[in-house]
Length: 118
Image 1: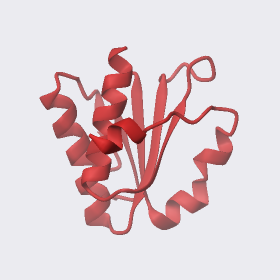
Image 2: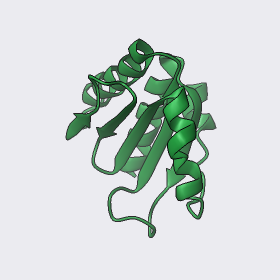
Image 3: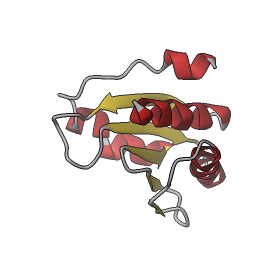
Image 4: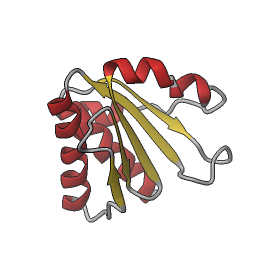
């Protein structure tokens, strides 16, 4: 259940930095990469970077390891690899272009309301 705790920590961190349209996909049995994907976007390079940094900081505060962050400099599509949870943080236009929700359309959405209320 630690992966669900990490999912909630990361979702809350994204929400704290005003990420938009936060979606969590349950990838168990669909992908070997991670148990959960988080997909969200920001409206500027600075906001995308702030969301990624907040996820990293909050994960560390809760005792979780962040394996790597890719794309932070460009801030168009930042990948935050936390092991069982991988976050895809897009710049608004790039999210529409890559449309990961459609690509992984067979993955059930995870209820993130608990994380957003805390």
